Amino acid sequence: MNNVSAMTPHSARELFRSNKLIQPTAGIAKGYTQANLAILPKSMAFDFLLFAQRNPKPCPILDVTDVGCPEPKLMAPGADLRFDVPKYRIYKNGILTDEPTNIEKYWRDDLVAFLLGCSFTFESALLDTGIAIRHIDEQCNVPMYITNIECIPAGIFHGPTVVSMRPIPYGQVTRAVQVTSRFPAVHGAPIHIGDPAHIGIKAIDKPDFGDAVTIKPGEVPVFWACGCTPQAVAMTVKPELMITHAPGYMFICDVRDQSHAAL
Amino acid sequence: MNNVSAMTPHSARELFRSNKLIQPTAGIAKGYTQANLAILPKSMAFDFLLFAQRNPKPCPILDVTDVGCPEPKLMAPGADLRFDVPKYRIYKNGILTDEPTNIEKYWRDDLVAFLLGCSFTFESALLDTGIAIRHIDEQCNVPMYITNIECIPAGIFHGPTVVSMRPIPYGQVTRAVQVTSRFPAVHGAPIHIGDPAHIGIKAIDKPDFGDAVTIKPGEVPVFWACGCTPQAVAMTVKPELMITHAPGYMFICDVRDQSHAAL
Image 1 (cartoon, rainbow over the protein chains, first blue to last red):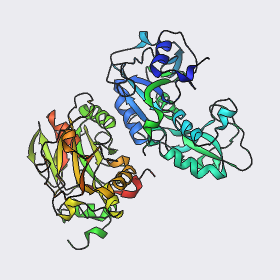
Image 2 (tube, chains in turn brown, blue):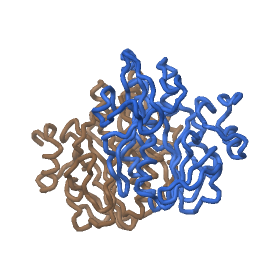
Image 3 (cartoon, one colour):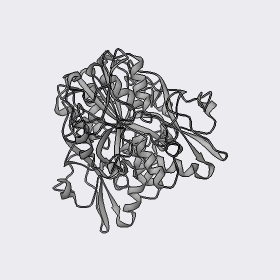
């Protein structure tokens, strides 16, 4: 692992590009924004962008490339989204067909790439303010749940909001709301605090994605809109081609986490 | 004028729809969000939405209708954007050709309507916190200037940021930043404080649009990104058809100003 946390985003992307480093990106280039990637044909791009615009909490857009151009000019000028993610997933008609380390052979002139905010950004802010993150302490994936909260549909896209859950001690719940409210561009404030059943979650110990974590006495489950939502929603329409990052293998931007704070 | 400020948005829209009231909307249905309107053909809608997404301070999107549907489902369910604005402007190939009170005969199945945030929302918040608004006190239009701050281009759209200016006493500048930062969805914090020349404004007493206002000793000119920007930018490409509200005759939403506060 050595000193990956002190790397610059540019150095990390160079290592990904040359396949000298292929590992999940958590902890790499600490302090810099990591982003979810979704690439779709132009024919679906307006509906997808509109879906994100209507559902900013689960779908916080950080950057959208020009049609056919693999450079995310706002988040990492000079980077190339065909090479600079450590691992990708290729979906054809909704079926996972490949998990390559670059997408050169899949790239087309009609593709549009979307970078979407990721919970790593607000988790850093929570940690910095002294709020522990259970799935980090338990060294597992964050628990995620499909809720009964329907997203606002847009064109061909519709589906339920997916949330991630972090147990927070009663005494820190207000602070957790305040801290994450500062980051509306990366999921923002919680969308639910307390009873899982209220948002359609039947078994808190059986997440739909990720791993279950311990909820200790005196802790409340707090739910944030999750960046899985747009990919899950896009998948339901089985696009002829959709490319994403492999789970945990994110795109690292040149922009610092703190630059997303509203205030 | 009678009691227009106490009207509900719905009642005001009814009067506009039946042409019983045709007047600028400032002061009508106080506390509710007023929005800029821009209607474009679908062929330009992706580029326009992307332009707004890349330039959220001048182009804060509140709602985008489904293609061919005149109902702004997020901001005023049940309203009809063909009738519910008191006065419209029709531009063909960039030339103003009509100023009707409804757009029934211009509406087409391929049109997409955008509602964009307006400075009325953050001006209410400034007033509520005890900061006076000079152009309101002087009963004129807000002064607006074309700056040397280029917007981030998107597809066919590009152009400079237009700003509005409000003189603020030194002792209230910090508070003005704080108050407007709470409203990132409606222009948010100032983009410049102080020397107009720094953002390419040559003569503060000669605004490009609107009216000049007095800057008193001990006051600083404070500049916010202006909702004129997206319309000005759209106009440069001379769309075959573009429909907007007539200046000052805004769309009144069912959503309260305060609901846009981030915190």
